[in-house]
Length: 338
Image: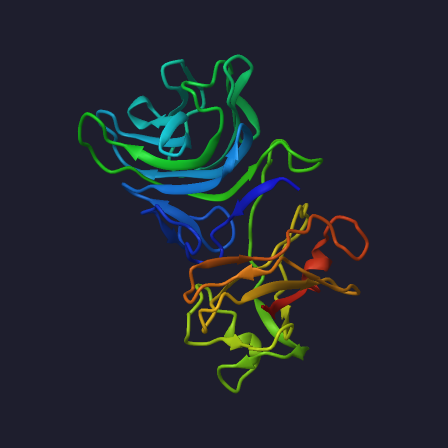
């Protein structure tokens, strides 16, 4: 599996991220309950350096009146060095423009107008001679830059930086939103090319099962203590000091219709109250199958760790694609580890 990240902001927070001023928003979202909102803001997505990858995001322009050098930018960088970017210039009617600094500048023909969600996909390959920056809008080829895509000595990129530019003048603020992000590299047999369209939703706990080993913070159903989005910190919780104790919860029905389900994963917010480097693993359990555990995640003494379970591309019970009925019968929860 070579999916580097999938992010729909459905936990209602930005735990696990740093270097941002953009904010969670419940009004401007492409799917689920939340998107990420920008004014004069920025957002930083770091990852292990790669020379080639495929990035996807839903993009929505809200409003604004750009003046001199007022752009929206989607940059791929090595550290803080910009290796290339898409510039969406609303002074020039919102055409996307792929720029490799000092090398090339190529415009598209699709106006990314206000009030519409667009799916932007980008293939980024850094190379002196055989590189490529290819952009698709709503699945259609928009811009292709081939050849030299390496403006300096950096042969890899390790972050996506989404921001605005106000160089050379001032103007009215631009407002926009993003959602349903994904990034693939090119290694492995799957998730090694275009991410394709994708929408991310959350299934919250909505019932207890017979497996309830953890200690609740109040004498109520356990699931009611862990269903809050955004998470409410130390207000309600379940906890344990015993290895391999776990809670398993029923999850809410997904409410989906005729869709293709490409992956599921679990996500939680947790901390180690003893500050001793303890761990948690997240469990999923498909109907008729065994529990599937994600890796052990080391916690800190604050809710700053983005706890992720295993990403599962197929139902482990039958090794077939996930179906709506599978999701509607899915269970999951946390397991204490050391």
